Length: 556
Figure (cartoon, rainbow, N blue to C red):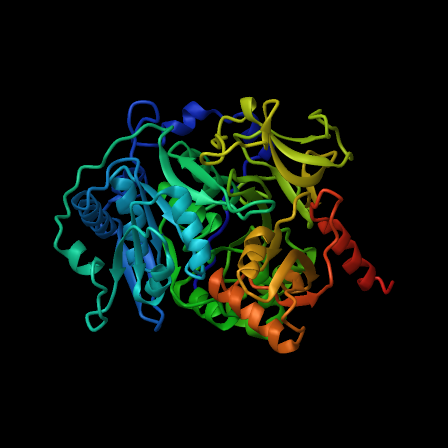
């Protein structure tokens, strides 16, 4: 067993928080956020020193490869030259729908090197989810692989497609052969300089009362991403870091790729899907010391038992959790079975991470608490009149924009942003400020369903179900689930010519899985004669949630 990296002496949280200065942070970057900066330079070029490793890659079949920062810089430059050849200009959007492979990393960094904007698309998305996001962004080009290429056949006004394929895979007419085209390019490409206000990423939210919204992420967010990696994840130069989150989502893209690379730290990709045994094998094989992921994965590790965990006990130095509140039982189990602290972190696609139990800073860590505001943010609790509340008063978590120098979200893409008002960004999450300054999570104040670390918008699931001829009306809510936090449940009103049956339930579930994504389909479907609605016709989800709560309590 490798010797565990000792944690350095932790500075006091209060001192670091009070002493935070954005000017000092900016000195750590090569570029200037006012006069010119390039994200690929910050995440790659400036860290090229000898054979420093940027990527540890484990393929679907278990092969392990290493890529140095110098190799990744060359790959990114070739992709940037391909994009220029295709007419992609600075500020235009390039979408990527790829598994966790070197081609994904090259696409992300090559897009940023060219001054373009990268848009992630989760590989489990179906055509409907893909089409909406591409239409929203106006992407000029999409890079995908053979396994996902068929989904694009159903996309209206699909942009130019670059396909990653093996030599024996057929290439669609009109597609660009990604590997052949990249190999034909020069590895010399002068990075395009942009300002901190220019866009770096185009993300998308999970919809609640409407479809997914676009979240434009500027280059200035690099500052917040780097602070999170240093203070909350607490990466040390000697650490082997693995964030298991998928880069098709915010936590995976922000903090499995851009954040660690921005501070010169190598990252890990495992192309295979998550399994407990595979996770332990990767930790052993690569010598992982800092792990990040979602509580669902950690609950599955706990369910597998201490015997399965014994082979990696004591190997990890720190574990970070994000995506949904971390259960206190998991915290206790990790301490016992793996001999490692696991800390809960809180954030949103619109914000990045903003409230954390910081691995690198000394402060009280209470299981069940989201932690303390990250240095660079002022976090408050508001009442319904946008007045700040004191300790032990439940309210809505918000960011004081003027007094949060790391805050970067300016509003949804081409849409109004009601969450920004009176100088605050309101998260939509109900919390309580503790006397010691930490934040305790109470629950969501909107309708987003959190399942297995994914945030699922009811509107998307409802829209997919309504495409099926059997569905006349539908409402979707989340049901508590011990393993996934919540599962998706759909209440369906059938069209006259259809009859309720188990076969129809399965057909509807498979329809959503194919059209939307593999994680967002309804695992429970109930047929109703009518949905609860207001006199004006607005759906009353709270009635359905109360009905389910009454059932769980044993009431009729």
